[in-house]
Length: 294
Image 1 (cartoon, helix red, strand yellow):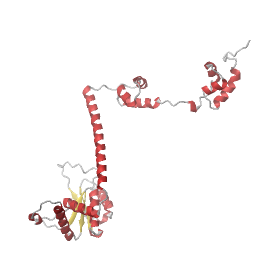
Image 2 (cartoon, rainbow, N blue to C red):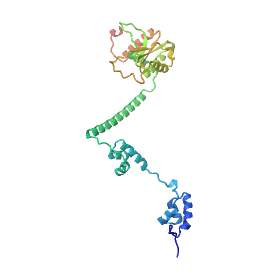
Image 3 (cartoon, rainbow, N blue to C red):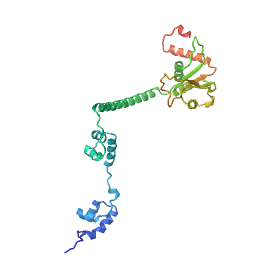
Image 4 (cartoon, helix red, strand yellow):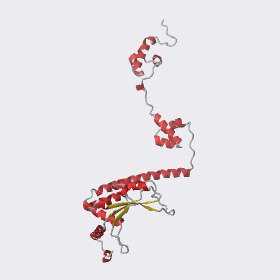
């Protein structure tokens, strides 16, 4: 009669144990060891592998670990089981198990819930509108294409007449002076002046800015933009900030306005005015003698 060890009752244990250990240490899985040794008794297989660590490659990553962490984070933010289920797509029973140790979120009254839901719908609508706005602008940008010299010439004349200093019957100022706070408008104006053959030496620069702003930083900003040394700028004009005026353009990123003046520009001014009226006539708009009198 065969006698068995009290802790290892199976008669084949002593013979199979070294083989099972060697196979385990070689990285085989339970199933591979079972098939290799023809051991189909789970109790015996457990005893043969007792004390031997599981190979790393056989450990299945727990996909629910990430979901559990996300569920707990959402619960801490005050979301209900229903909301967490919508966010993560897992069952409410799992969510309950994962977050049961966390405090329950305070109940919101129906009006507050409706307000939150309405706000989310509005945020979504704003995102949709922003995307539509971005696409429209991108498409329009491509429609312009590359500017010819004539395109730039006409654009510069119109821009000057809209933003530049103009001569008046009651205040004769036949000078070319342009003021703007938009760096892209400044860049276009300078490109136009280059097209007209205005030498850089004929340009003077001056900053106009509110007293509450960082004047030195603004001067450096504009000097870098136009590519000159800040020491060549004329004295900055400081505008007083009225406490009654609720200005919103004096925070971070506010650099005031840049004034660009063309020295000895009377003749150029007269040509600009003539070009402008040429554009008006070219657009087939009626114009009377009284308009020329200015």
